[in-house]
Length: 143
Image (cartoon, rainbow, N blue to C red; front, side):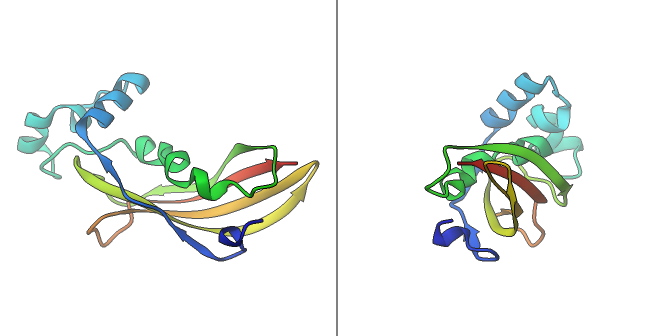
């Protein structure tokens, strides 16, 4: 395990902007085109957020983008997203917001030909008091 992956040690990533193009592309892929995500004019008028918001699953799907270089332990042949113990979406991510991940290894368990790490991840929205998302992400490393 690299020093940045020491049990309990925190990692903070760079910010990534969530623009309308990214939201629309995600809506196309998932076929979730609810107006609160895709209709800027209507969202500005009718949404309690006064803007479009990113899909919760879009925010979650950014984890590999944000954490990929931190997940590499330098020794494994490959790693696999094994799933989540829990995921909570705590606050909306408005269009043009910037998000980053704060993560730490909660647990490390040997498995056949590898190790399973449980990452506690908090997705923060720049200038927001409440995280956008919190999750326990399970990643398996094979050697």
